[in-house]
Amino acid sequence: MENQVYRIVEDQGVSYLEFKILDPYKDYIRHGITLRYGGVSPSPYNSLNFRLGGKDSKENVMENVKRICDRLHIPKEQLYKARQAHTDHVLVIHSKNKEKYAYGVFNEELADGYIVKEKGIATMVTTADCNPIILYDPVTQVVANIHSGWKGTIKQIYLKAIELLKQEFSVQPENLIVCIGPSIRKCCFSSEEESFKEKFTQVFENPEKYITYEEENQKRFHIDLIYVITQDLLNVGVKRENIAVADICTRCHHDEFFSYRYALQNHEKDYGLMATIVGLLPF
Image (cartoon, rainbow, N blue to C red):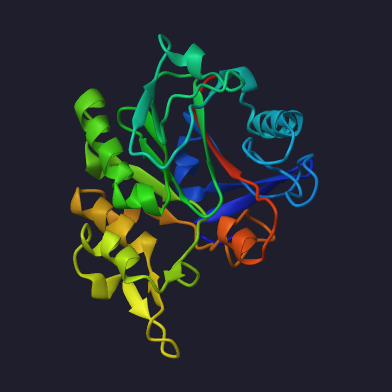
């Protein structure tokens, strides 16, 4: 599974996705989005699971974290994370506050995005259909790691991250490189609830461009999250050629990536989470 946008790296059984657009900056940034392979978690996770809130053991998840950190050559002691809750809170992690967010401390502060300027700091967001978004500015050497599900997309958390990058680090949007990882796509993100559709139409214009109805069931519509995110990015000045989208639907490829919707629709008792890890070198 590889195309011009991304590659899949397999290292001692552990698999993760890399974006080729970041290849020129390998001396500055390290990143990876995990697949399901190479961990120690049992069924139904099978096997590189990063979800602590399910029935998998904490010990399994911690071992999975160690394995991906080892493959990315990131010391797990320098990995940081707060608690995700589909918010639009973006946290700047630096040397003065990082210890309370060290992975393993399990800080309960809510954050669904992280900004890092200092070297030797890596962050992690977890997803299972939501959009993992990496924002990287090679000019100012600042990186953001964002979790944007449909709730976060409606809240436009990625725009709030860009605004914070501008205010705090003088980042110019036209310099940003944006990578959007595997997530549920228009083919599988559907509903029949008009009130649900209105959550999007109240925020995003031109619904005819991102909402389509099924021919056989005119009540069921599909929403294109990638379209609205991309349009938002373009509208604030990000260049189209700097936006890389992995063309992978997690629901369609549930055997390779975790999918909450697949697990729900198939009455599975639990589900796993993938990890997107991003850090600035050197460690």
